Image (cartoon, rainbow, N blue to C red; front, side, top):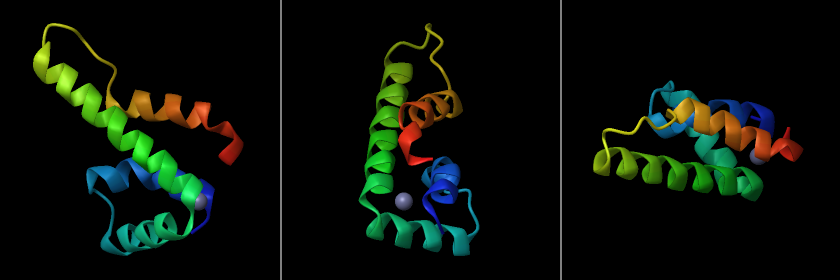
Length: 80
Ligand SMILES: [Zn+2]
């Protein structure tokens, strides 16, 4: 599992939709790779913030998680 693959699957890892073997590979990668762990940490915060905002103000359309994730990937382009 390299960083590019890890980042590609991180959103699904967070959502819990990966195969168990992939979940384990990413978990192992995050424990060994602090840049990817930082990205995952940021993603968790962004998703939590977006969800809490959505819950609080359901009349405003917020970007979905995939859009946020793509923006985060672009911001972290040096990792690719
Ligand atoms: Zn990595």
